[in-house]
Length: 205
Image (cartoon, rainbow, N blue to C red; front, side, top):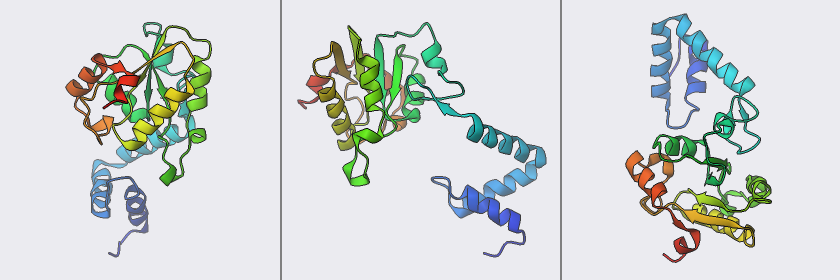
């Protein structure tokens, strides 16, 4: 397709790089922004620039944050002794939407996947171990997807923390095998968190 405007073509090229968006959808979105007027495009561009310049990772849990310590870690109403291990920010958002979890999080930034070249050193596993080094009576809740990679990552951490006085649990398998947390409905996810089980038991299925 030949565009009459090189600027429009460049915009469509950039939008179409987003996951799940083809060129037709990208063109539709670009034309929508044009119809809404320049103010709409400026607000969007300002938000994207601010995200690129100011977004950071929380130094405690590695969640995405506007500040050095995220609002969840800074919230005194949260349970310090309960830490939920998740793959990425999408899982934090999914769990928070249930309103059932009042502990804190640790975001791994991915899962161990040798086929994709992702090893333990590329995740925040060492940070988690350091975080729990002097802990006693803490509970570590594994809320990773029911996939081979999710199970392998949880088991690696489980072995890494052997000998520490940390209770390790896993969300109950209300989440289907092979499913990702971000696609689970809120009721199922909330039930899985409420009826979590000892991690050792999750290995026996």
